[in-house]
Image (cartoon, rainbow over the protein chains, first blue to last red):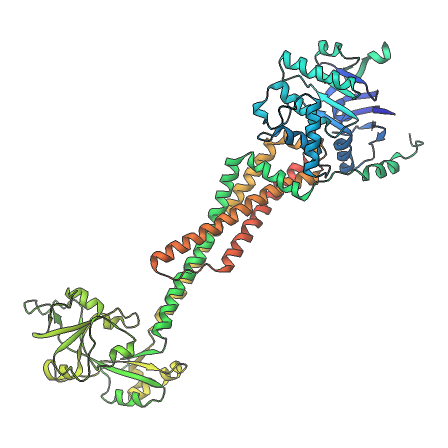
Length: 227
Length: 405
């Protein structure tokens, strides 16, 4: 069973002629893999992230998350898939201002219905895992850029998702913080976390074990397939 | 494609166990957290709604308090006072009542007390040098000693007229008359001139709300007036108290009793009607101000809606994040609606308190009884919450329709 699988995924927008953001994509990402999805802007990699994260539905084809076909799920069930099986890391972090690090991470479990104390305990464990055990009561404006993104990574991991989806995770970071965040990804990968990084940064992609190049809504090259 | 075993059946059973859930306590936490992140805006929208509520509660409270003052006054003064005056009628109307009137009226079983008053033709002056025409719009009345009791009045200074002692030219002043004649202190003997005759002032009455005429008069004992001031006194008006519950019946038979020959020339009035009309008139103003308060409330509600709508646009990122960590559309809707409701609740509590405080403060200054009607308190609070709900509805729905990405 794959952590994430796209089967013949097409995403088109109505028009004459219709605009194809994705023109038939097949991709399987196994558990424990670390994959870079690279491509210039407009290549369709963001649409692919939306498909993989069930943030949007494909026009054709199907998306399987952790072996679960999401095609026929209603909005609430799809939301639950996101909330339980996928962890998101965004370029713009989206931490709540004025909320402590622990509570920002605990928010990753907000919609699971678990009690606050339990959510906070899990948040503390996850923060220690990403090396921020000493920043528990800090607020976002008291953290460096790299630390902020590590908090966001902790929030994405706190519910132990099947796959971590990172959308340009270092786009807003300087080179030092970028190195720190990528170092964290490699550590998490070594510990068995499945990670998909969407980026346009080829140098960064080069350092990841598997690279998928997207162009014009198609997979142009996949290092795992082409070799 | 269709040959594939329907995966949905197994999918649903495997996801229903781990649906997205939000604890009720977290609903509040999330909403309060959202508001705390935007304190100034939250404060401004609360201000808008609380001003609206405060004006509603204040208007209702003040009108009740001021009305209660009037009604209290009526309770003390009684509504059973009637005045009888010569009406304008059809005839020549000689502006006096028949000599027999007092005796006849006193025989009515429903009349508890009656006092006749005769207006003198001369004016009253501070000293004998003042020209005769400068009367200060004051009148001189001759009355029996029961006048003060019949009117339910009391003395501000000095003593009232006394049936036995007052065969001499003494006078009691109405409140307005005392002011116009410049008589403030009866510690020193004070004289006024009725016509050219000096008269000693023995007392000043408190203002009589039910007999404005008396306030503007100088009252002398009838016997003394007869003896020293004017010998052809004729009754020009009567004040009488009826038994409780017989006011209207008495009022109806009075004209014929007073002047059986020309009942249409007798006018009977009930002074308390004026106060009651005043209370009613204040009620009319109340509705006007209530309307204004309502407008303020609507404006406050629109303020909340505005803040919430702008918040939705501004918080797209947050909404997207929440959707990505498992918030359903319902959860987003609930969050925005709760934020708006919390604004309404805070606005309601503040507004009701403010309105009550204004009522209490103003009533205390005016010396009224402080009345904040329960209906205004409950109604004001409910209105605030309802406005919060209505104002939050559209933004909440809009927020929940945003795509998660």
